[in-house]
Image 1 (tube, rainbow, N blue to C red):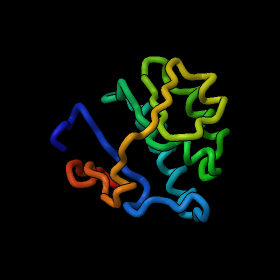
Image 2 (cartoon, rainbow, N blue to C red):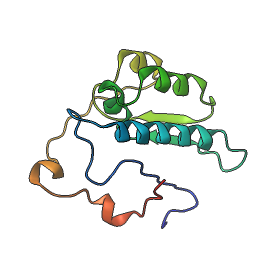
Image 3 (cartoon, rainbow, N blue to C red):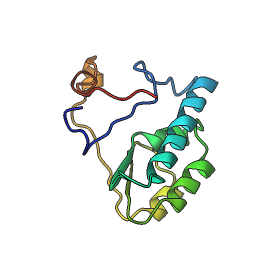
Image 4 (cartoon, helix red, strand yellow):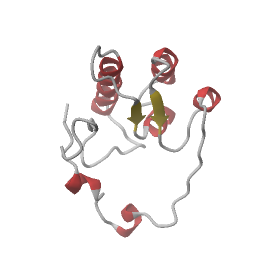
Length: 129
């Protein structure tokens, strides 16, 4: 809320995260809800974003929680004037092919490995859907 209206943050997954080895149908439903919400956001007549970040979408697609076909349809049909950022490991080759920039990051230190909760959970107030 501190950065509104220039910045909007929406969270669709639960605070506990997803067990990628045993994801549930509810996880898949949330992933589809998130993608459909993003479609609504880019179709807005007003307040359309300049930048849209799909956090960890690569992981969600690589584990079959969201279909690659649905994600590619979204990527291929987004307005050209919206910068789309897809994050997460295991980016499918089709995502990399369509990208203008591909970055490979490696963590040197990570809060999760130390058993800490993410800092942003306390500093941002996401708009749950």
